[in-house]
Length: 548
Image: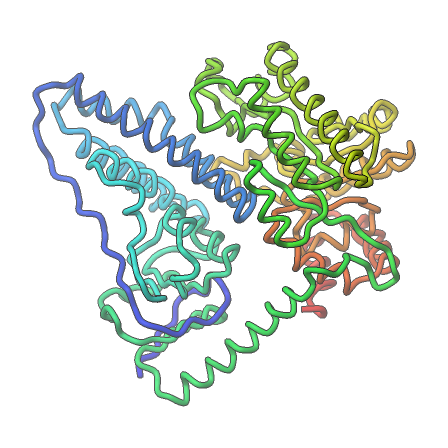
């Protein structure tokens, strides 16, 4: 038996046979005669890659969550990066190089810059550039996106020099037991996705590809980063027993499906789900979720070449509302801009799109576009209310109008806005980045993005307090709503509704059932006295550790 230690990236145990991932064949230099045609090949490759990335963004949003999906929003931005485009096209024009070779040299240059950085987080951003480079190379070579991950009939442990975020997000978890890579670290996007998908993973295990063979048996222990090649029977049995304990925990979670999120002191908490398309409703109903706290309507507009008509939108909103059978559905109007672009809207490129012409600003400027959506929403509401009445299904007769709370300005003026709306929905993803001036898509600073920053914490409490002062309910639909360390804090602040990815519902329900509102309020008082994000995160971690 051979024992090797790498970096534990995603906890869990995998026992099975090896499949070594084949690497892409490096492109070769070719001189081309038709420069315009070669530039068009590169443009077409980018266009096709973008379509696949938008689809991957949407599927990741639904299956995993917004935080993980933002990885692919960043990849979209990379493919559209002017420096990258100019670099490739200049190489084609100046040297008469084929697009594959021009792309390789251009991306290799940027990869080398990140690889030379001392900060491990920044160093790992080289993988994102490699990911989009691989994607573009596949398009240039006429390879379909289905070829990104190797096919296998039997469950395997993947061993590779590296795996890109795209590779990881598209893994069939029924066929991938775990994976090991030669490079990477805990903060890589691949590692983050592995943890979210609950795929056991070890990274940074140099030379592993040359140490194993296809179909060889090994044990992967993602808890401490150990790999056991050709382990003896007693060792294999030990890990089977450990794996059984893990599976029992997950089974216990699944038994919570038909229970309510009620705290130890008897307070029922509203747990609802985020969706992006009508097709997502089935997934949340399968988990017995009785409400939608965020319907991201921009996905109806994405992955198409023209604006959806009023009728198309009406049918989509009606289907979602009908399928929820009287349970609440919160529909957010069009939020385009920033990391979400629609080419057919022909919005001019901006220096800082997150602070520019996006979301409500766009809707107020292009009023007919917004009116079309509002008419579709109102029609769907009226139609479904009529159906529910005929079927004698109880529902809230009121059509509530709420407000997204996503900027410090909105939080500061929350006491004023609370007089004008029926509810607040806190979008923590934007609130955090606007409060601490960190672009969560920028690999140079995104590691500074934290929901535990005391300024963010205070603004969230201010929003909740202002809402309750005026008698309206307050929900949270950002990634922080499912943050296991932060849930007791939000509960202690009095948050009324937690809306999250469907995959996070059961674990969040388990946590709420094991804490009390009273203890959470005491925790909140302690947290509000702390002055740094590090101290707040540590206090929240210590609060939850005894329960795990």
